[in-house]
Length: 265
Image 1: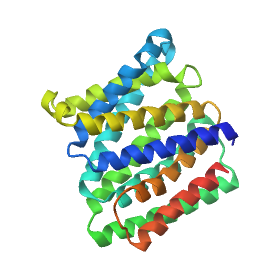
Image 2 (image 1 turned 60 degrees about the horizontal axis):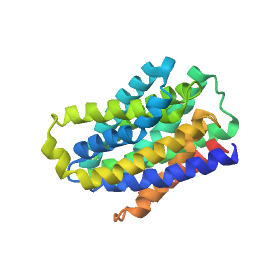
Image 3 (image 1 turned 90 degrees about the vertical axis):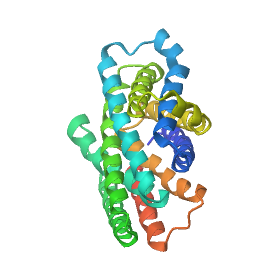
Image 4 (image 1 turned 45 degrees about the vertical axis):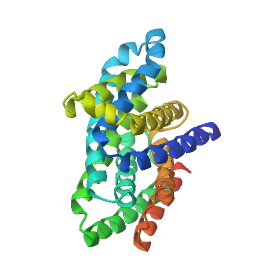
């Protein structure tokens, strides 16, 4: 994997961990993510005007819809369980599905190390699933698994689209769609947006920066490797949170990260 792509993805992982910690602690996660989407779209609108996505506009819209599903599932998972459970499961499920999708849809054949990494990811997810059962957080586990499905969807859409267009303009459309649809889920309540302005601004900076870095990385490396290497955000997020998870949770999260590293090797 190209060194520049690795640097981009690791920087994105740090930003991703930060905004997830902020989202988990927010009082109104839906409103916060609506602000984040629309703020990101507004910040990138000049790029949209200068270089619109053109022939891949439909993919940008589809990506925004998938992002909205991701936001709703993630907010539900965080409202029902600890970040140390929901974050690793959501992020760990995605690489397995992304590798499969990259192989079937983008003709990206996984190497032996990638398959070994997928096995480690599977083992880590099993441990986290057992921990969810022990702690009575099976509903959070279900939403976290749905998060993984939605991540896979928008990752595959984006990986295809950015091969044909400039990432900033494309991302502007995706963010606007996600922001407006998420605000619709909040019933277009302006008062909720005002109350969530501060955490929403922090989340906006993290989501926009992280996603933009990943889109540029998609232009330098296969989708499966990019999506999996950024899973180091899992450990960063747990470390940055104030939670004190059990040893089994740490082992499960570490296996997910180890699997991601093997896939990206």
